[in-house]
Image 1 (spheres, rainbow over the protein chains, first blue to last red):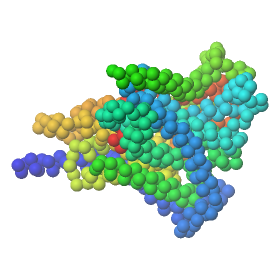
Image 2 (image 1 turned 135 degrees about the vertical axis):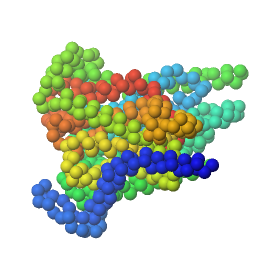
Image 3 (image 1 turned 180 degrees about the vertical axis):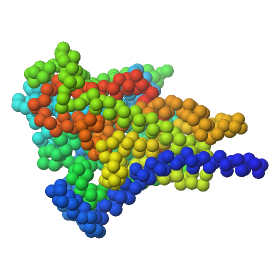
Image 4 (image 1 turned 120 degrees about the vertical axis):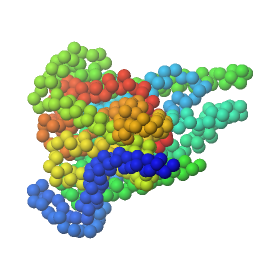
Length: 304
Length: 285
């Protein structure tokens, strides 16, 4: 007995050894940068005209104050949220519908693997290349304009990137195309996990497909729906590649498609450490709160 | 039987509606790539004349042009992207499996706190720490170097989580016990027993890690400065900022096609496994 006890202790030490690479790399490349980002947010430190270094001087919460008082932060937060919602609403509707069909045994759809493969594909495409493609297709001389003119829908070139509405709609639409497949797969996994006897009972009671969907599927899916929504929101806050490439980093027209991360990216390029740090910390706090909600949901779910 | 007949019509119409919507959705997903590959076969003057659905015969010409273009180093871009993505995929999957093995196979005091910690930091976006990250690699003299784009993938909480999930299903503790009785060391047990058993999960995660790195734009754009170090997404961004209208559009489309084609090809061969792997690890989170 005693020898096995010692043996157990001896090899369990390997748990620590195997964790060394992860911990080491995490501390160096994530934890230290995080601490340094937070530290920087309390200092005035930037380059005047890109040349003369100002600071670092400790300024307390002044960076945060100017972040909010400038109005830019709220504007970019608003832009980000609007473009996220434009993409998320069709995404959740289409995904629910497709997942319900894929998981419905009475429909017996053929070619489900093919359709699943196709809808997931846009998610794996390089976002910057996809945006460049959209920019080329929707540009003033691009094929979409020429197609719409040929069909007689419009008579002169429509400048998609010069109108706030169409520019935001395009960003939202691209997010929808890129992410609804992923959401469908998540919801489908949830729907396939629902006890089929519930459906059988509903069918015995002559419930229609619509009733089954609203009264059984949706309530059971609620935790997954919340998970999908919050992860999508976290992803939405990180929106960068698509509007950055579409608008060449300018957020045109008049910064109405400028997202929070594009704003951060500008600070990183101009080496405005103080403001960049404060903005990062704000993003960190928002993401942290959202993650905490997911964390709560998952753990409470497991004890049910 | 009777009931089935009663609902027969409605199921049939519902099926038709489902197929129609699915076909429309398929078109919505594939249309863009169809236009892309058509346009990559057309010449600049043809493209300026307007759009057609029929491929033209300038595919070879456009290919030749982008490979010999002096202002767009696509070959080095392809190589850089591939090198970084391949190294990232290898390091990320190997060490994430190792981390998962540590939590899965051993009992130690910090096991639970470690696991909770990794889950807690899973959602922190890389952009949030980018400022400190840049300062750090600047002081390490690693700007314009591939190392800061590859090595951090050793600590990937999300990949760790998937590995941990699939390890629970595929790696029985009895197997490790019997290997120990045979006198195998713990490091050897990991490399010769755990790793081979995890191959399917590793393959799926390797593809994901590769694609994520291949597509990554934010961090590489901040780290890589010189032209011969740039990856494809950065080159695409420079393409966008150049005077777009003066560009040979055939080359632009060909460039975009070249940067997404590798991923599409891999996906067409392994698509089913990828979607399957997604579903397997999906909701447990």
